[in-house]
Image 1: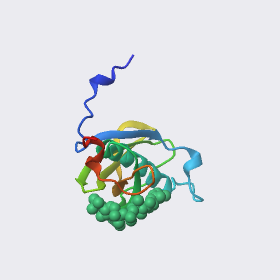
Image 2: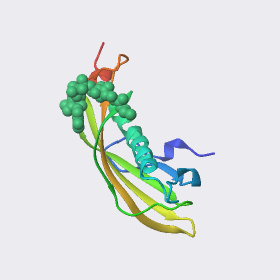
Image 3: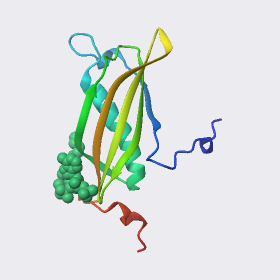
Image 4: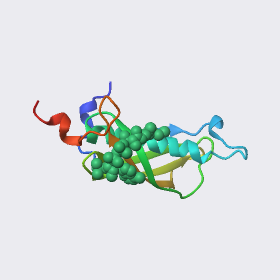
Length: 139
Ligand SMILES: CC(C)(COP(=O)(O)OP(=O)(O)OC[C@H]1O[C@@H](n2cnc3c(N)ncnc32)[C@H](O)[C@@H]1OP(=O)(O)O)[C@@H](O)C(=O)NCCC(=O)NCCS
């Protein structure tokens, strides 16, 4: 059994592996390549895992500030997405994201496939922005 305490993931400003997933045939575009929107979706999810921790609660994506496709992803690639908090504002968290692929035929390889910067906003139950520190403020 894996002991979760072996992993120190307390600091969202440090790079961490947020997602590891295999690119499947269902994720391809009409040309048979992996669809860029699939990778964007995975990056958004990866960034959100870090933003939720930094914001201590629910977040929504407000902006994809930058997304750069560095090299293609192929069916069968193991895609690993790393994320860290780059900047924290009053209600927003900007997350830096880097995606790498391990080819199916060469699982020890690392190919840089994308970089992104995505901003998330901490929201309250009504969907409006909330100050990030508010959760820890004394009642
Ligand atoms: C996100 C949302 C709650 C923000 O509400 P808002 O009233 O526009 O909020 P504000 O203008 O006060 O901005 C909130 C924060 O977002 C930041 N922000 C707004 N637009 C931004 C942009 N284009 N890029 C980066 N940051 C941005 C602001 O700087 C502010 O950050 P700060 O408090 O740390 O300074 C609202 O726009 C919303 O619900 N959007 C839809 C979210 C969603 O559905 N996402 C999924 C899309 S599929």
